[in-house]
Amino acid sequence: MFHDAFVGAGNPNGLIPSSGNVDAPEEWWTYRWSVSNERTFVCKPAVLASWRIEAGGLDLCGSVNKIRPCSHCRPRTSRIDVAKTLSVVIPAFNEAENLFPLMETIPVRDLRRMGWNTEILVVDNNSTDGTGDLARELGATVVFQKERGYGNAYRAGLTAASGDVIATGDADCTYPFDALPEMLSAFEDHEVEFLTTNRLLRRNRQAMKISHTLANHLLSGVSRALFRNNVKDSQSGMWIFRRYVWERLRVESGGMAFSQEIKNAATTAGFRFTEVPIEYRPRGGEVKLNALPDGIGNLCQLFRHRLRKAIPVPVQLPPAPAEQPAPAGALGAI
Ligand SMILES: Nc1nc2c(ncn2[C@@H]2O[C@H](COP(=O)(O)OP(=O)(O)OP(=O)(O)O)[C@@H](O)[C@H]2O)c(=O)[nH]1
Ligand SMILES: [Mg+2]
Image (cartoon, rainbow, N blue to C red; front, side):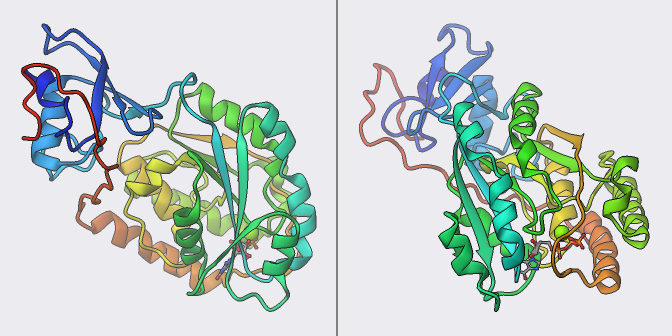
């Protein structure tokens, strides 16, 4: 019986079925992380068997060649048993003049009232204007990033983030962090795993240079054509996603192309995805973008990404629980 194969101390996936009928192996089952109890999975025992044996990872369904989580095997979060922790990750290079107004717009108290425990991570890269020290004084955790670049900053910040959900945005006061409560409600209500935002609206026109708007439309159009994901603003830097999404994506860009790559990787991998319109505000302080080289670099990255081979990302599984009483007939480790 499939069921028996997945219970007991020897189960390396650390999963225990929390509902289901042992006598009906083809029925849908709910599996729950026995370690954290934070995530539940709903799938057929037979599907889980193929994960376990062929892929050894929870987000891989079927053979190792497929990295797409199948529609019935994605982790689901239940409102009841998820501890709501949020990490706001903000890359900041010489943004000291923006930090005070920026931190003021992050509605930590409102979020707490909604049940979110929030940590703010500012990723600094040897800024020369005191960005790191100021961020620390204002209550943020500062993550030090060795290698220059927007994507490298995110890689460092996302690795350090401990929240179950991650929200991102620039430090230049362009993104509406004050709208996080509504955005998180939309994220939960639509039960998506990755929410991105669209700044390319008529009402935001004055916040972006015409050349910048045109470049954004061009890059987004090419991106949509190549990845067929209908993302209207591929360059937007404000996203909300579950941390496990990041842990399961292959995103290589160290520079500005990180933004389009993470969206295209998430949609290609089949995570539940949505895009919502946001207000976009005029930038404070100095631009870090090198418009032409970054634009050309992003265009080239789109084609490289489209052509590259899908390689499964190794999944870090939690350790098996030390002591799980094995029911009679359990097979233990296979
Ligand atoms: N830590 C770190 N942050 C960076 C680096 N490069 C850019 N950033 C930050 O990443 C965010 C995006 O950079 P921006 O200069 O705003 O680029 P952009 O949003 O494409 O361009 P604008 O529309 O002009 O704002 C900002 O908060 C920057 O401070 C870097 O090398 N290291
Ligand atoms: Mg910006």
